[in-house]
Length: 208
Image 1: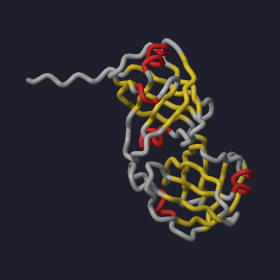
Image 2: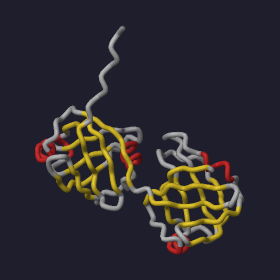
Image 3: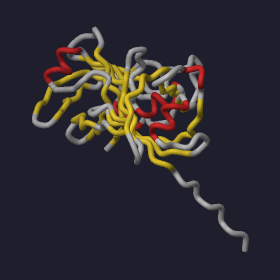
């Protein structure tokens, strides 16, 4: 059984074909490559099944694994564009199954940045990709801390490898978070809520 998490993309490709692109920058999660290019498989989401041919593109300059699918085929399988799924391939049955995987997690260090403006959250591209947050200039999400919640507009710096996580000082105060502290972050694609929880670093082991 081969498996991996993918971001599903709608693409103007033949309806009976899907394309997989593995990340060239993130974790090496390409167990699905063993399917083999040109392999005809059965796509399954719940009780719905469709047939398609698997193709591969060159590894992309991204931190995610992407699966392109014709919008009509995706609709018949109830698969949404720009959403994350856990994909399992069973070589015995030749079935490629899809299960929603909307929650992604990471850790970050909270920073203050007065230049980003009020009610804004700046997330580096690498961290944005890890969390499954779509890149959009007009995107607003709800940031939720243990003490409060606040709607913030998301922006992304141009540096591809940026992992920064910055808020303006007023937003940090509203969420009752401490600048410079480490936080555990999780993003739910269904609710569009970004949950922030203070993360206590593990103590270094004592010397004998």
